[in-house]
Image (cartoon, rainbow, N blue to C red; front, side, top):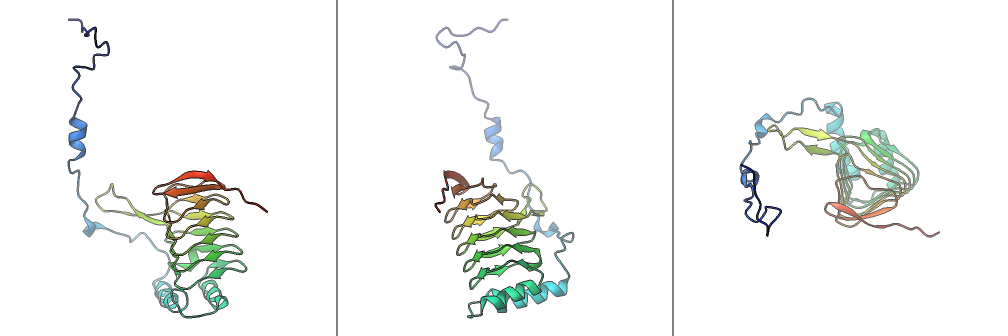
Length: 212
C-alpha cells in the first residue's frame, strides 16, 4: 500500500516519532577502565639514573624560588641535554620534565611556575613568551581503551608565540608564528599564525597586528 501524507503536513513529520534508541543508549555504560592493566613499559625517556638525577637537580636549581642566577639555570639545563639559545630568561618555580627533550630558541621568556611536561619533544622558537603558570602537556591518555594507554605527541611553539598565564597547550599542538593563547585558555588544536585564541577549547577571536 502506498504511503500517504497529511496535506496539512506534506513533510510527514507531524506524526513522526523520533527514534530514541540512540539517545537512550548514549547514557548507557559502555565498558570500564581497568587501571590495573595500565602499562608504560614501552615508554623510555632515558636511563633511570639520569631521570632520578634530573629530578633531584630540577628541584634544587630550576623548580625553586632560591635567587639563583639565570646563567646557572641555563648551564644546568644544557648540562642535561637541553638546547638553549641566547638571552633566555627562566623565572623561579619552573618545572621541566626532561630537559634532553627541550629545544629553546633565542630571547625566550619562561615565567614563574611554567610546567613543561615534555614526555615528548617540545620545540620553542625565538622571542616566545610563556607567562606565569602556563602548561605545555605532551602526554595524554586513550580513554577509549580499558587500559587507559599513555599517548605522547610533541609540541611546537613557533617564533613570537605568546602563551598567556594559566593557559594549557595540549599534546600535538603547533602554535604558528606570533599566535597568542589568552589567559586561562586551552589549545586543544593548532593555532594559526598571528591568530589570538581564547576559551576552552580555544577559538580564534581576532588577528594580531604588531606595530613597529
